[in-house]
Length: 126
Image (cartoon, rainbow, N blue to C red; front, side, top):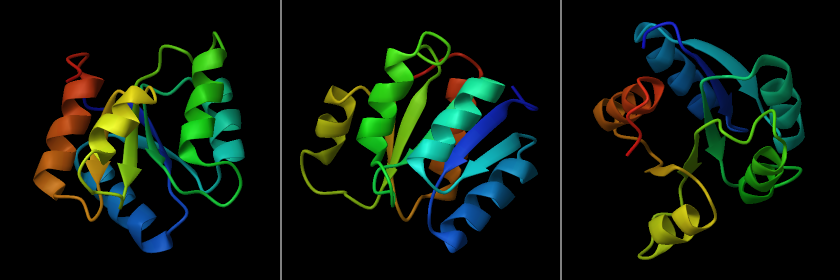
């Protein structure tokens, strides 16, 4: 679904630039937040098609931000994918159990990243 709007929540400038560049090259529009609090504001205001959420953020962490998105009827149904450098055994399962729709480890494999984003923006999910 080219043209879909994706909220990218990432506090690392280099990662944000990579995600922005890859998403724009793939035909997506982006909203950007560097904190969980700002992500909540943008999600409520713009109702993006997808949220890519860094798990470790400077204010509230991604898991807490996810809980707040899920608790608000305006944002509860937006798919949210975890973006994290936490790639140990069991981390994927832990983040899925926390309520994320999917999990992408950093550094991202760009091909898998674009494929996963495309699947969610097309409504296919996992």
